[in-house]
Image (tube, rainbow, N blue to C red):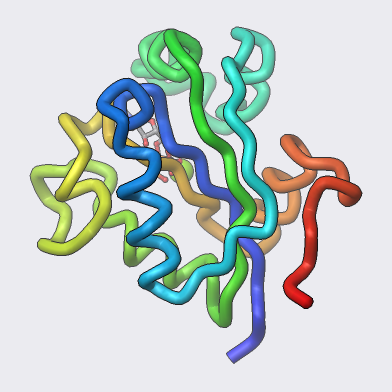
Length: 142
Ligand code: ATP
Ligand code: MG
């Protein structure tokens, strides 16, 4: 299985609940290395750009409002098969439908406030990583 990188965002709801450490611990336990990490308050423009693929969806305004209401923690994660493995650890978009043991089951409130984001393909992971981190801020595993 190829080593991949994916982008994680710990969303405002989980940061507000002080679950950053717990979520990073779950990720490290699941075999991910954290290659880059920062806490940032997204501007409306940055959030709209990040979720541009959803701009025609009815929940777009609500999503941008949520993602900009307080800081998020953005990370680059690496392991074999990282994109699919991280989606599995995150759980379903709606926490009520997420499997036991997943991050969204543990910390998500509802389909909008669902604790974490994860890239949905390797191509999008590359785009999303570059959206937040210049190459100089991603430190490869020794
Ligand atoms: P993400 O892209 O954040 O990792 P996802 O890939 O599981 O989540 P998407 O379909 O890409 O789900 O939706 C992006 C985000 O938009 C969701 O994580 C959630 O915060 C929000 N969202 C999705 N569906 C709804 C909805 N029906 N009502 C409100 N917000 C929603
Ligand atoms: Mg998505």
